[in-house]
Image (cartoon, rainbow over all chains, first blue to last red; front, top):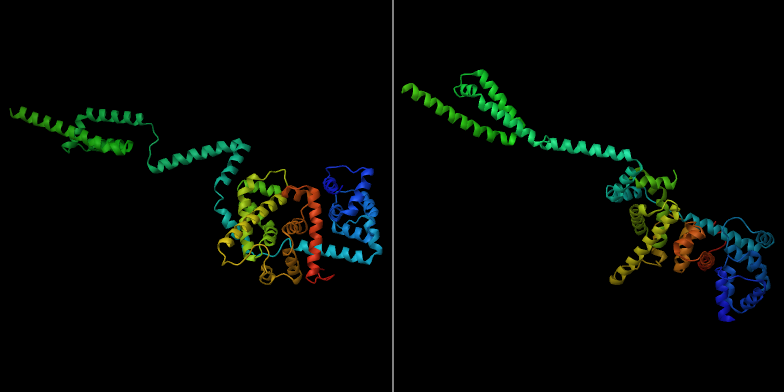
Length: 255
Length: 187
């Protein structure tokens, strides 16, 4: 049974096999001949206590060995009745028990050794670089899913931000067709007002000059990039036309 | 504040919650690192690395699981990675001092610690254990994890964890006795 017995003990200890009453005798026989299995069996806590005690008794292990094995398995201060009873009249096992509890207490003190105060600051510095990355973005998305109104608020805020930035950068958001239409109307008005254009050139009509300046300013305001060039072209043409007309008039007068 | 609430707030980018979380677990993570690398400065650096890794991995944390075992598992993986890197580095740079597993207690980092002689004795005894026993002492007796938590962390049956834990305690007691440990010196 030796090799198979070892496998079987391992399987039982890992709760992969059941131990019936008749098999217990076979197990005891195997444990008497195999130290490795005896060691493994003794240290396995999964085995029901009564079964373990029976087996250990059958193996004629002395109560102190049994108690010391149980001491090694201690989980908390709660002692099993059998162990407690043994400890009450065995000073050697009592010492072993105190030794184990002292060891456990000392080990638990190693859990949190002292650390300098700058540690947290160092960690925060290292992690703050990543704070606005994907991790934060994920948090925002998560928040948006949880609260749809927040998404709308965010979209509104973004829109205002974009429009404000565009205004600051000088980008016109008025539709271009409207500007062109207004410019055409203005050109038409200026072309039609030959009288006050002529007054301007002859520098005689102050009122016309004011009206003209106002019109040009409006034009420039509408489209500052193109207005000057277009206005200048128009002005040159108007000037030439006026000069020709004046020259023609003079010729007529002289002729 | 509960850990789950802290994590939730950390996920939403709350820097104060993250600070609180680091403050709460800093010493524990440092203790974990110290049992793996035997140098105080190295352990401090490693603990910071663990927190950075935790910060980046908070999204992977599931709300239905316990935070401390998850944190310690992440810390353990980070420590193992660091030790592996140190071993590789030491292999190629033979002039560097051996720092990995069993540091000489005389120039051990624990001397730098303002710990009592008892702690030094304990660290020295733990250093002398096998890797398996050392890990079991660290997870079970120092960090106080449950068998079930250790079992899922290491991926081994719970019965095996219990057996290993008993063996580790037994080995540790033997190691302490070998170092001249006497009854009552731990108390």
